Amino acid sequence: MRITRRLEFDAGHRIPDHASQCRHLHGHRYVLEISLGGDIIDAPGSEVNGMVMDFSEIKRIAWEKVVSRWDHAFLAWRQDTRVLEFLASLPGHKTVILDAVPTAENLAAVAFETLAAAYRDAYGNTLRLERVRLFETPNCWADATRED
Image 1 (cartoon, helix red, strand yellow):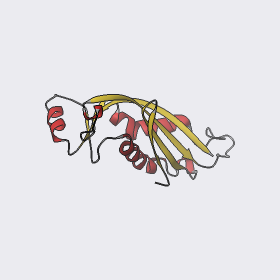
Image 2 (cartoon, rainbow, N blue to C red):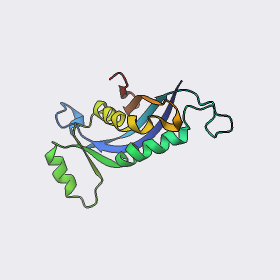
Image 3 (tube, one colour):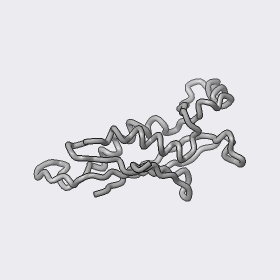
Image 4 (cartoon, rainbow, N blue to C red):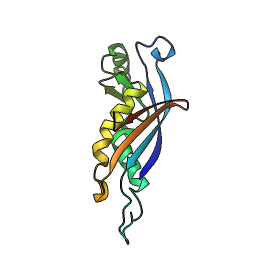
């Protein structure tokens, strides 16, 4: 069985080598979809009976590990020194420094890697993170999957 939870957050970024508009500082209303695969729990009397995992628990883990860190932050590439210097000049600015350019593809891969261990074996169920889909816009997204 596969289940999916959707979360939204706002963040800024820039793609420094981009040939067009994305080289400028800008932001997005990102959407993160987390798809988990596992067995339906057969445990009469348990609060998770009939579920793969409680959707609120999927949200709690994703919020703790990824969303709360990225929400209303500027996601910056470690090698984008000019932007990092600028952001450092803003007292208390929420900046997340990444080892890769903050494209939708790289953000999806980072989120997948971060969340895979967090969901593994929850509730004693054989639970697997199958896919992280990160929408940068309503029409553009990247998928990081178990096969990747």
